[in-house]
Length: 249
Image (cartoon, rainbow, N blue to C red; front, side, top):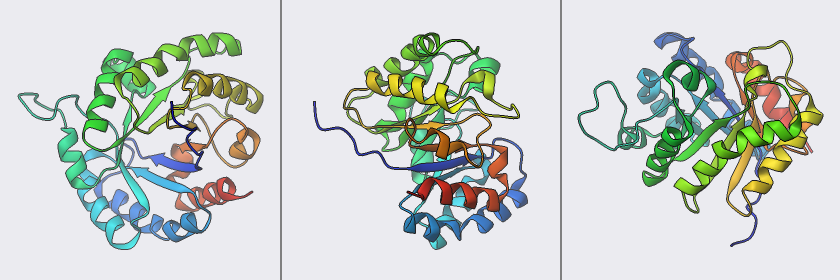
């Protein structure tokens, strides 16, 4: 087993299905100045818009902010075929995506996605040269040990389906998503430290998501490598403030 993967700070946002085409295009334009700022602070940044906006977003980012990574909100586990309504990882890669969000709690709840399915999608991502951004988390607030037990199969299924490729895990306790406050820093640090041990020397990053905002990273920096943001970062100025916080020493 190789040396431990250097931990690099990362901040990203998913737009889910909140914006229309023009609003997404405007948001991308307003986020372009964040590219140089993130570079100067040695922070990796990614934006995940809806599928229809990916091509325009890719063009804009490649032209003016090539260090901002473009992601997709899901993909299919096969490269091509008779899969009506699905999106091929080959197409996502060709558009310019470098990562794909997988296994979000909403998809697990609404569409019945399970660990096996998410692992197949992760395998498809790495097969096509993209980084899986895998959402993990426990459903109910309990002890650190119970959270680790619930998240363990979510992680091991991904590690077993891939080999030495980089994986980003977004730890989002389901009970904390959409709440006024994030999970307590002490709790998150304890859980993520245990989850990181499960990964050994694999190339992984752990982000926290779930009502994340200003001050969240400073309180959790001992356990996580960055933040996966939601509606708070739909305001580019808020996104900027979090990048600045994550990039500070």
